[in-house]
Image (tube, rainbow, N blue to C red; front, top):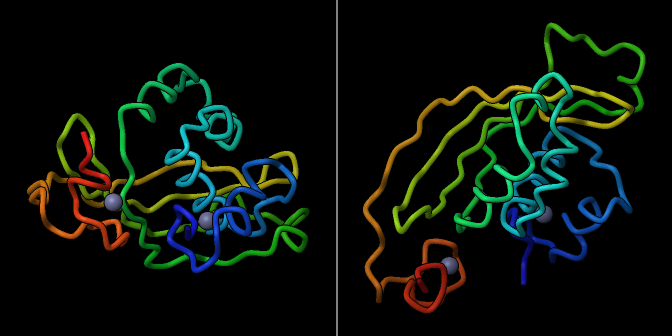
Length: 166
Ligand SMILES: [Zn+2]
Ligand SMILES: [Zn+2]
């Protein structure tokens, strides 16, 4: 199976290494992808820990967990990602211009199908990338795929046998 984040690698080769803390996310895009995979695998602890401290206060671990449990993530598309190397930025990070990742994600929540597009900012804290602020660019409901349609997640299964199996 390819990774939840939509990369061409398997989950084991890709986001799992980061979720298991064996590897650090090397770029804002990698962190963003790993957070998407954390949503998909309901890893609320990871989501909380990779949120910048200033934003953690607004979030409850239990709320993240509850939201993740009720949501099926179908697809992620990264449109643009500013690349910064963590080593070169360790001492010279410009807090006024944090690197950003522009992405769209498709998910089902309470049997409704949504597309969201966000511009997320990332900062370095404790020598690792963290999610800082997300600016929502669009967020709307889409018609639910028909039961016999191919699933939009790209699995080549019918929707009813895949992400629409509820
Ligand atoms: Zn991945
Ligand atoms: Zn699917």
